[in-house]
Amino acid sequence: MFSRSFEAVTLICSTEIVSYVRLLCMYVRFSFNVPPKNPGSQGKIKAMRLGLSVALLACSLLAWTHRQDVEHWRQQRETSLKADDGWLTVAGLFWLTDGENTVGSDHSSVILLPRGPAHLGVFEFHRGKTNFRPAPGINVPARTALKSDTDGAPDLVQYSDFTMFIIHRGDRYAVRLKDKQSEFRESFTGLRWYPVRDEYLVTAKWVRYPEPKMMAVPKILGETEQQPSPGYAVFQLHGRECQLHPVIEEDKLFFIFRDQTSGKETYPSGRFLYADSPPDGQVVLDFNKAYNPPCAFTPYATCPLPPRENRLAVRIEAGELDYGHHDRP
Image (cartoon, rainbow, N blue to C red):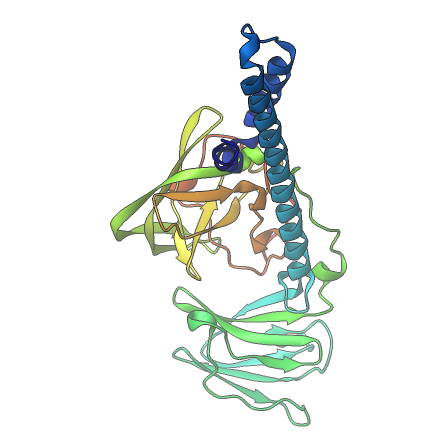
């Protein structure tokens, strides 16, 4: 009896732990305070009470474990942001034009560095192909046919605290500049979060399409990209049925969503959430791990925006709070 009770409680706690704990507490208190009508049933009543007590303890343990998991994830999230190659180091975005694109701290440079040599080198761009040629006396190797971020990790051009690489957006190419001494990194004041709430650990129904459907995903740069979506998640929140439609990123479901806290407590454009690809008909959405896109921290990111399907009419008071606003250059 105890094993079946524990399995049932484990399943329920994973999604509705707060309400279940409250009901369980009420029932345990009631069962302990009401005397049995049949004295011969006292043994069964005691066993039931003991089982409920064990179930309550297990439920509380699961709540604590979930909270610890989320807090650890949040610490890793902030550590990643502050890392030498984190988003806080993104200090520039320079669109390439055909021909020579100069690099240096001289104000005539196309790719302007905040400090360092006046002339670091030249990015030569032609028909989607980019080479780098260092200026005389600069100890940086020449590079040909630099790989962009289109297919995995891009090739890097590094000098002192600077890292540069090619990004490809739509039909345009740009040099993204990272700086370990970026003003965004040095002025970073830390992330803020809603308290962890177990009611926002949601088990949703997963509806898989027979074949992935193309979904229009707008970008902060103004264009819209068609991306395949494998299906959608359906769940109840605050008495309303909600749907979220993901795209696939690194074998995970990637949700870009906006809710009724956006522009108030949370970042105006929306937030991101990852979930494991479901092996069956359910997907677990932990909104306590919803987080801000890179555009919340630097004006030089090129973030996707929530598609029309993912603009929710409910408040999701979970996950990362707004950090601040940055005007785009």
